[in-house]
Amino acid sequence: MAHAEEICPVRDYAERVLSGEIPAAEPVRLACQRHLNDLRDSELRVTTFEYYFDEYARDHAINFFRFLRHSKGKWARQSFELELWQKFIVGSIFGWLHRETQLRRFRTAYEEIPRKNGKSTKVSGVGLYLTLADEEYGAEVYAAATKKDQAKITFDEASRMVRASPDLMKHFRVYKNNLHVIDTGSKFEPLGSDSNSLDGLNVHGGLIDEYHAHKNSAMYDVIESGTSAREHPLIYVITTAGVNQNGPCYQLREYAMKVLKGIEPDETFFAYIATIDDDDDPFDPATWMKANPNLGVSKDIAYMQKQAQKAKHMPTAYVNFLIKDLNKWVNAAVKWIPLHKWDESAGEIDLEALRGRKCYGGLDLSSKLDITAFALVFPPEERDGEYIVLVFFWIPEDDLQEREDRDGFSYSAAIRDGLIYPTPGNVIDYQFIRKTINDLGAIYDIQEIGFDPWNATQTSLELTDDGFTCVPIPQNIKNLSDPTKEFEKLVVAKKLIHGGNRVLRWMVDNTVVRMDENENVAPSKKRSTGRIDGVAAIITAMARAINLEEDNVYEKRGMRSLLDDDEE
Image (cartoon, rainbow, N blue to C red):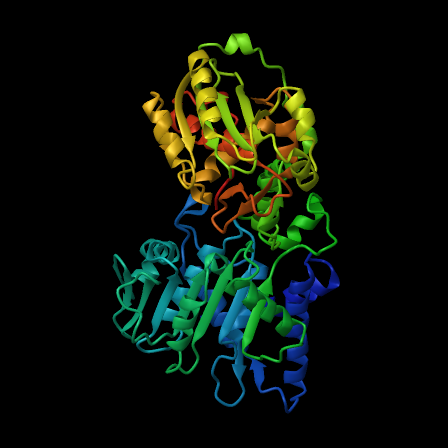
């Protein structure tokens, strides 16, 4: 390996960050200040500080990456050259040693960084270093995730880099789920919670990618317990931000911040968190480098501009931009479509022109005591046409004032204007709904009716007897995500014509969507600020429309380039 460089890249990065030459938010500034403080304490031989920074150990790890080769894209088969910020991380983790034992100081590393900053490639390289170059016989290194298929993302990248490097191929034997070093008996494997056995692990290196997606700490705990017999194991957690602030990743993040701030005196814990500061404007390009140290290298500025443009117009895209591109933790509940966007998409509906048109129904059959909604979604008949929606509402006519006081909406005025149908008594008679749907079926060509099987089974059976094709749409986030996103995209593109129905407008304004760690979104009735039955009915109908329409309007318009999310 090469000798120490004249200028230490770890110190150089820290000093340039703290001088303001390299933009960085508070967590990275704290990590840099910690490094410089530790160097001072080490040089002064502060008795309470047991570590020193070894230049050879630093360079040994950093220079190892030059033996790796990229396996994808424009850099394929080129040597991997760490950027200065990456040298800070790798050099810090492997350069600090215990003064007496000469063993590695840091046993846990937490790195949080947005997508497209080369994290998967770097963590794969760390795994290969731990397997081959860490002077550990019988090293067991695992790329760990909740599912083995997810763990294979890191492992497969490492496997491709080995195959692309003649130097590494001299040492490794490459198998489907195993990289094996003959000389030392060391191995690198993917490990998921669904693996055959998690017992008996003797972990030298545990690489946990995308920890934000873990619902609990079970896999982390398995890795940690498996390190007990090793002298200087490393658990390397690398992730983007997420939405679950009650999960294990956010708890580890909070611990990392306490370490960086000196509140928690853990000398064996390393943390690097790239994000923007709380008072930064997320749309200001000058702040983007704080969260994206590889901006202009593996992450293109044009990509950020595109994501920012989407975020300005789409609430869910804004949240996704904050999380995935600026590394900000965001609450899972999001206020959805701004009313000015909704109003801009209103258009005018010619009911006579819709006669005989193909459409899809969505039934949101709420409690008999509350409002119920049925939606018809008409797909476009031509390439650049709009979707048109009609929504019908029912409510019991008794105790109307009580319902108005509770919901803050004038149902009586909506009934007077023909926007809501009252049903006699204090509960909805579902036979009124059945009759209306049959009447609509005589006017429009209803292909299918989607319904929530939780409380509409009997009505769906009756509608089936009437000759309709009824399809259950379980109201979980996975089923509703695609139609929810399509709904939003259509509104933003002014391609969802709803005619300005004020009952539906009120419900859109009430709607809050929930998100999960897989970027799925769906309306949340529990978190919304009022009734959203009409929105739920449209999305249920949209679920069938986008599944069955071969001539999808967006595919033909070529608008995916503007509106679709890009994955890392």
